[in-house]
Amino acid sequence: MKNQWIEFYRGLVTVKASGKGIERFINALTRSGINIWNVKNHGTQSVTFKMKLEDAKKIRSHARNSDCRIEFLQRAGAPFLVKRLLKNSGFAAGALAFFAVILLLSNMVWGIEIKGANPATEYQIIKELDKMGVKKGKLQFFVDNVESIQRQLSNNIEAITWVGVELKGTTYHLQVVEKNEPKKPEYLSPRHLVAKKKAVIVDMFVEEGRPVVDIHDHVQPGQLLVSGIIGKEGQTETVPSKGEIFGETWYKSEVILPLKSTFKVFSGNEKVKHALTIGNLEIPIWGFGSPEFEEYELEENEKSVKFLKWELPISYVNKTFREREQVTRIYSNKEAFEAAKDLARKKIKSSLDENAKVMGEKVLHQSIDNGKVTIAIHFQIIENIAEGQPIIQGDSE
Amino acid sequence: MAKKWGQFVRGWMTKNMELPQDVMMDLPRITMIGQIHIYIENHRGLLAFSDKELRLLLKQGQLLIRGKAFIIKTILPEEILLEGKIDSVTYISDTD
Image (cartoon, rainbow over all chains, first blue to last red):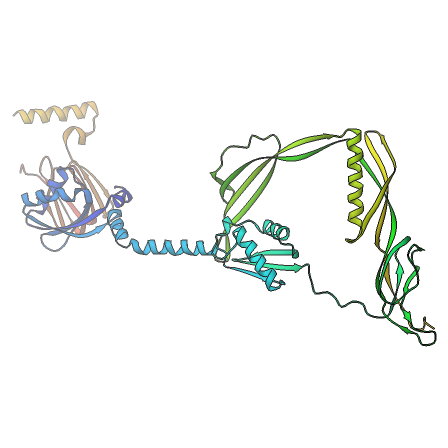
């Protein structure tokens, strides 16, 4: 028997032949090499049989010669299926388009929700996001990842201390903590002002309370500066004393700095690769070959394709190779001292209040041994040394 | 006379050289599977076909197959596979 499947691919037809010379007709067909099968008798002088579609055209002449009328009953097989499929291709195209649209819409940014920001900051954040390309209707593949949005926002907007960015489905949720939170009402219960540390008073500005020290006084930590008890003796009342007492204080800062140090910097050369991953298979789209850098840092950015709420195992990967170079810095002795001083100044500044002033500095000692610079500097600093101390009732008597 | 002589030679060759008869003498080879299938090689064409009867032309004479519900599963110039319920297979020789 023949392989029916191959016939199916080529297409087959059912033919009905009727007339007197059916046998002659069948003999003629077989002799001219036309395959027929499933020959069935239907009543008197009529048979049905199946044959290949490609032979269908040839049988006409044989039928005429042998006095037969033929009729095609049924068409089956791939060619007819394809024809029907083409006729109904609109449905298939529609279904495909539907999935494509859903896929596209599932990967868009559909909303940005900002919580915890006042309207002005919110507007600023929205503008900043806009600049980064995060807005409604954008495809998520071309938007930076959450960490970098978070970093850029907190770097570029002064007004916020921290921002948490979270991507839930198609919506970005931003949780903002602002720097300028409403000031807490000041501590207004009765109090004294006392010295924070050892200092010589340089300037005083007392809003409320009775100062008990004077300029050029030398104070010890915990010493009373401004009393919260005012009024004549016997008629005293306690007030929350307020004010700023600027005193000259002294700090000693010691810095050790190696003369020779190596560190790594980016050279600015980078190579970007784009790829599509399906399961474990990676198909490169753009950027081929491995980077020619000896040392590099790899930043990988993966975005998975979503379909409705599910994540497909397909994802878009963006790899950036940044070249890294090792740089050796060698200071001369003089440079090393300068750098160490600089470092010491910075160290001091970072540990002080914003409104503290460095009045003078004095190098106590500097030395070089074992390839390291050691420097000790004495700083004179003017800062507010006042500190509140609550007055406990009963203390005033 | 020449035809008869040729047949005699062929008959003698098959007998003495042990060659298969169907090849040498153009005889039909008939394979039957129970009553349901019959496979005939070396026929010379269809003479009559209905669902109760099939008549085949052979080199010498005819072959008549009777039965019920006949379907020709395959037909090739020299082969035929018939399906149905076969009751009888009869040789009709035209020399008589």
